[in-house]
View 1 (cartoon, rainbow, N blue to C red):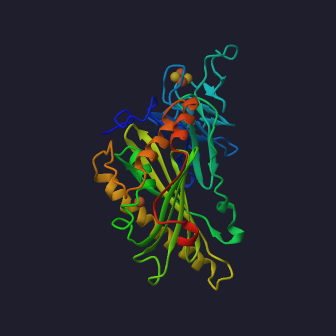
View 2: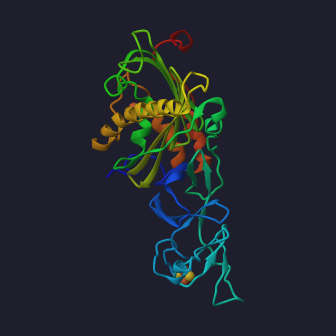
Length: 360
Ligand code: FES
Ligand SMILES: [Fe+2]
């Protein structure tokens, strides 16, 4: 299995950024064990419903905080109290900041060092997101707002998350897709390509692509216009202008070095006054999502079966794979070194076509 060191990405095994860790609909109040970034973590909701994510192992003597069914702490329903979580072994309880706030058999002494590592999580657009930082710093990237989620009144149909499971591939090979002009026709069925470029903008990487499609556009003149962008290393969004506007998410998160978990989702704007009832609107949005999921599935079949590509053999007609990989390295190195990588790639690379305004 090829890991971060094999791709020479930087000094950290796992990147700095916001990452999807779960479809909120698949989690009950917990505690639930999750495994990402080579670490066992425990997710739970406090009594307020607020999500929390903590290191899986208790600082007292290393018991797994979430993996237990026989302790009386569990049987008595005492694991989550308020926003705190209690260890099943000796019953020490930890607050949402990780600090131990109760030792049942030691009312007068709680060591300061009794602190459970906690991770920053946000629930947004039906998804649980985690801030991961090898340096332990506060977020220096923005978690996308996914504003369409709260725009149902304007006709947006919320997404259901598609889980592609884990793939034995380093996420760099997924990010390579941003420069991959050459796979658009053989993999995705694009025809009559008109335009393809990339914009490198600090922690954002954009791809703009205009082309027809074998099945998704009607008639030879139909053009699908796609704006796709990464915000940080693990969250891809795409705005597609077709018969209905849609907003796509592809999220990928390292599980271990060289193993990645992949999700997909799509929101579609279907007008309420378009002559379709509510069930019809939802059905249409689901059909759109299915088509989008199938397109990603075409990439996934390649990713699941390929060998690692440490140095893509880039020809002049290819997109800027090399620059994409330099851009991506900013997340695998200390934040004060990020600017050096950004500077090397900042700007626009047009791979195909002339001016987009006239092309689109
Ligand atoms: S190991 Fe958790 S309370 Fe002792
Ligand atoms: Fe693709």
